[in-house]
Length: 433
Picture 1 (cartoon, rainbow, N blue to C red):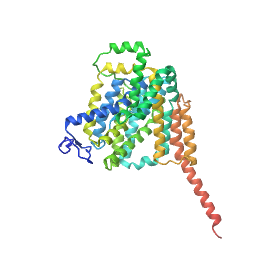
Picture 2 (tube, rainbow, N blue to C red):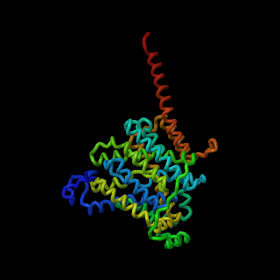
Picture 3 (cartoon, rainbow, N blue to C red):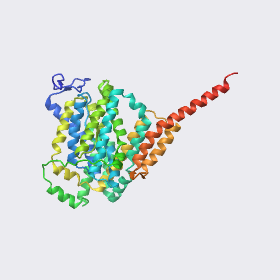
Picture 4 (cartoon, rainbow, N blue to C red):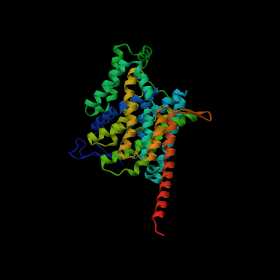
């Protein structure tokens, strides 16, 4: 049985029609749409290794392999590209500042992937409502906000290192996002990084040592692989990312279901398992954790082509590009000023994803439980509260996430019990003797 059936004659799509995930157009057209997906995902996939220091080519390799694995696990029902998750940037950077090397950081990525896989198995067995009860929108939104804003000081520090270059980068990103159309607006950060790099090159702002490495790097070669090492304090820093990955994957499934007109609730568990396995695979070899990319939903919505065959093309292209050390060296010539201009926007965008979760789900932030728990968790996370517990150092992301995930259900039950007793007493007073 073929993986995809040919849509019509394979050369055109009639007005109002869509190409379903299990369909495809002719292979030349499918290759073209696959290239569009490569362009859409490229900016995000590159920005994560740029900011974390992970090898770019290795990250590309595991994003491509992870996408193929995801499509296999979801049985071609959920079109998606698994790119580098921005949510890993803050905890990996925090782990690095705490003295963790690449192996220990990868250990955190590996465990996060395994936990996400376990969550997917539970959802597949018990249903997607399990997530809604354990991690309501107020919790998931709060964790996303504090993860996004935890690294705000790092962004401003990089910005101040080369303010002129950072200003150019930031200006181009803002203007491209506001004035651009279609895919150009969606890759505004990548455009800003490119223009900022050119400005740095013209002004002598590039590191000479990295330029030497670029010249000496071969065009073809194997990606750099690193084995993980599990360290408890690093794992606790990275684990809150699982909440973000769950929210992103479930959101992606619902978004795809909305644009394709299909009920994909039964695939939610498979999507979580697929992303969990892909993240674990990346952690085993040296790549960053993965997630489904919203950028590619935009491509599908614009083209009305949801064929997973195009994603296979994009994944294979990423794998092919990963075998170029020259490309890896080029990316790492990006200077601090460019990173500062890009991350000033990028980290804020991550935080605003959490705000959007609150808004989309009409979270009541005037409710005392939501208000108090979120307030305390956000300050702990954004202020990077750091404490040692039994020789294990936990930072703000860990404390903020632990606070909101554990305290919210406890205080919610106490609040409900207290108000239930108050109503009972009031009714007893009013009841005639």
